[in-house]
Image (tube, rainbow, N blue to C red; front, side, top):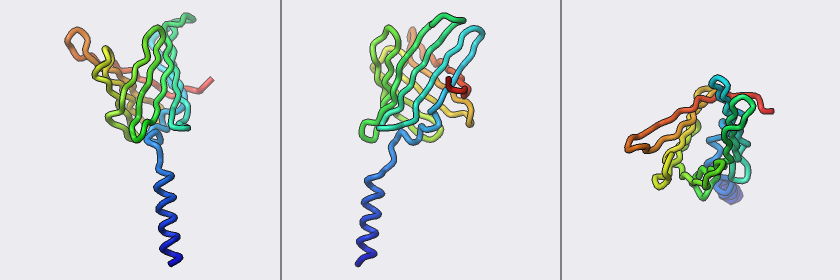
Length: 152
């Protein structure tokens, strides 16, 4: 009888401590950068906690700020949402359509551009971020190759 009670308690404890869907994205935490001549894009992600990963990105050309964006990836039930707040633009939300330990894809078909945002891990020290959507009646995909960088 004691064994059955202990087993039931173990099963209940395991069910209540179910891992978050964000746990697959722990590899994204940290600092990333992409350089192209004088243009530098930096992206930084906090470790998942409290059902959310917070991120920020900025692009500079030389010493001039070109653009910046605040982002969060949050859990809503069993789903992940990418909530972007780009400079001088309205907030946009994208729901995950795929998530694994190697990447995540978010989509919002009602958004103008992009309608799809993805992050794919490429080994321990690089990733490919991409955006995709319709422009001028044609599907356009833009890839951003990032390398892991030291955080300031």
